[in-house]
Image (cartoon, rainbow, N blue to C red; front, side):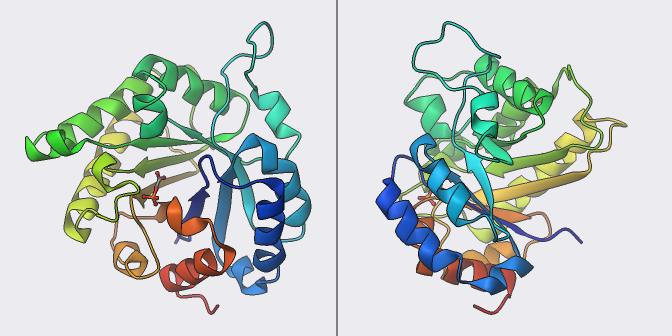
Length: 255
Ligand code: PGA
């Protein structure tokens, strides 16, 4: 059985001083080696995390990148630059980038396949707004976000890790979570849609994470569900002690 994956999304938080304080505590928690953990962090702290977590089992991820090899894209950062920090993952299609920064399905799709091409695992975020959920269209909406990316596959996904994060927008940073039943139903649906979209192409692994106000108190209930393979955690991942507590609760490991 694949282990549950606990992924932090620090968003626009933490200076290098904060990141160093985090790793000083986090790297000492040797039991984390029995779990699967990753931190997606701002570009500016990746070097600090790379150094501080070098001998730990915690992987690194970026929160964004520009999907071109190089060139005249003032202010942007590409995957080749990010590989210098030994990143394994990159977030793609987070609702904050879709809604605040105007990223549409076309750009999300381009980013997804550029990451695959460069052998970095994209974590594709999908999720509906409250209005969409209330209209009964949540599954259809998230399915559409998947179809946009996977309808055409420029590169084979065989032997790649496919990770989707289901994050209902109304649950992000609000303290409200989806009910465990709704989250499980959505993740099961997305799993089925993906199997259909990928046809005979078998990825090395296929995981669906839940995100949206995950914390130590509720993580275990989500992780007990058959189709929830991990968590994407924002607010509750910022402090090393509490993120470690959350992982211990969610994985059954001993903190
Ligand atoms: P949250 O954020 O845990 O603070 O709700 C999750 C996310 O946006 O990835």
